Length: 140
Image (tube, rainbow, N blue to C red; front, top):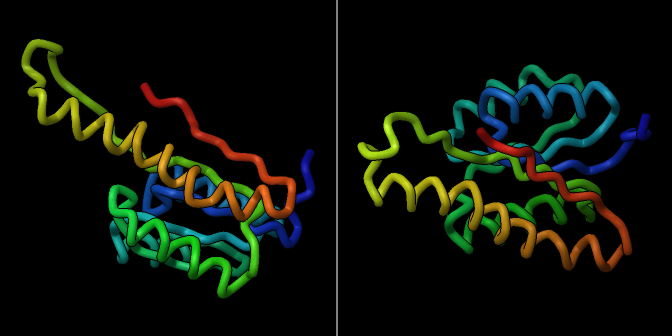
């Protein structure tokens, strides 16, 4: 088991579901957890269920200004990011033939490009310290 005590963990898509559950688990293991998602209310609900220190940062990962704000707020508060969990994502439901191009593009924007760009935003901070795992859970 990895010791997460005092590690700064950024979890995207932390307002509900798997992201919220991961945030709680990291917090129980002693991590400082930065929570981000579009839903301010969802982030607050998740934060209240974490036993340790949290930082709620609402934002849209498709917007570069929001990604920059997320990283800046974490660095202002804790001066580092030790772990990135790219959890934010969308599911695509329905018949392949009925799903529109617009829906496909939205799924790819969130599930692929948002994770890539969030990684690009956090990676310089991690490289500066020569460490930091980045996780992007698989989606079905």
